Length: 162
Image (tube, rainbow, N blue to C red; front, side, top):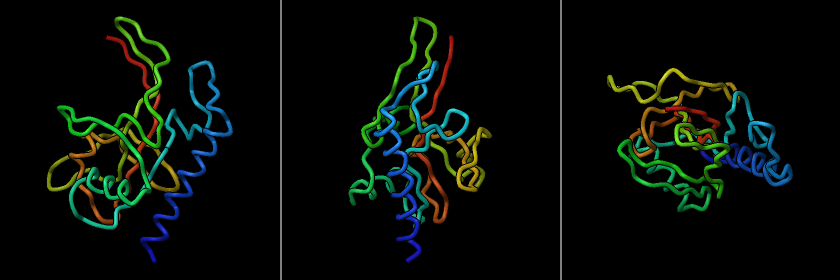
C-alpha cells in the first residue's frame, strides 16, 4: 500500500506539471522561463521515492520506464548517464554565443548526500513538499538507489560564460 501511495503521489506531481505545460503553452517570460516554475528556476518534472536498495538511480528509472510510468532519454558521459529528455521535454537554449550559454537543461536532485564517505550531492538545494533536495554530483547511473530516499528530475535554468 505504501508503494502505491508513493507512486500515486509521483503520478499526481507529473500530471500537474504536464497539465501546466500543456495548458500554459510553455509561454516564456523575458528569461525564457516556462510557466509552471516551482521556485528559484527549478521545475520538478518527475519525483519519486525509492522502495528498494538495489542498483542505481538509473536502474530504478529503467524499472519505472518498463512499467510505463516514466519516459526519458539520455547518453553516457564521463560522469555517468546524462539525462537529455524527460516526458518528451528536452533542452531549451535561450541564448548561445562562442563564449556563453543560457537555457533550460536537466538536473538531478536527491536526498542522498553522503554514504560510506562518498559524497553524492553538493550543497545547492531547494525544498519541495517539505523535502530538501540536493543537486547531484553524479549522473543517474552513479547515484545509488537507497530505500526511502527521494529523487527528482528537474528542468533547471542555467547561465554560464567561459
